[in-house]
Image (cartoon, rainbow, N blue to C red; front, top):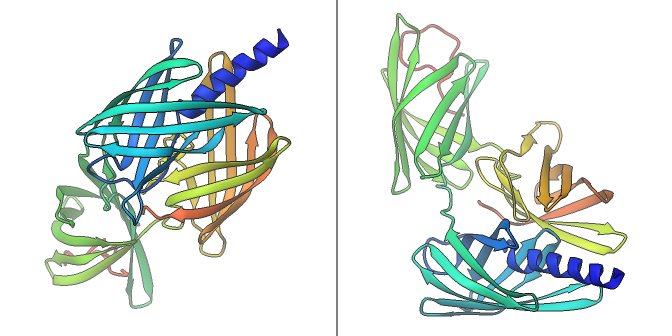
Length: 348
């Protein structure tokens, strides 16, 4: 009976890893390469994960899956017309299991079947659209005489991809209207002032990596403006490593510009990040996952120093030291926040 129970656990967790993985590469907008949200029903349990395929410099498709137990590569990835197939081999406790996926790509939809030692399971998938590069929080610093004022423009995207924005500064919030992002260019209007005296400024900017730069047209004239992406050191894809009593473990953490994240295949709505001038960036998240009647908790507290991460990972099995390496990016001075009450329309 003990052998049977172990065999069943191996079968279940094998399916979790083989079916519900998260290969993490930069997403493309067409074809098989990219990030796919995959769903499967396993004995009444609705499971969800990511499947991400990439194409290397030689034009060959590669990938890896990452599930609850870590990273697993895809083998024999083949794209023929609208057909996608690959194989996975998973080893657990001295046992080995193999599965083969065969599916069909239709636009941004994926359907197919995973066949393995535990039977056949239907999969459905939908391609995840990358966030527009303008999404995120951008800090603008303006220096005038001996004073330094800061403002933050936060650009968000909803599930349909519609953009919205907030502007905050030492003087409070400003109203953003006529927001538009097209052909790499962000434009919007910002209304500032008080009830008795308001003025509108027009912005036109482009994204260049971790910088948002362009011009602002105010009642005083047009000037250049430049902002930096907050949390740029954290944004990107990290391979995390730690030791357990069963050997080394690896997992992937991906952090998006809006500070949502994924740990393996699990979505983190908001990751805490404190970017201090005199210390490393502080990272923290906590998530809870449920498989059947079991609950698993994971908490990470770490520091970021450029492309390196180090900290403490706490799970149901204990606490371990963890290190991370950044494997890919996501990848004002001139703003107008002024504490003066000048009626010049040059205010942040």
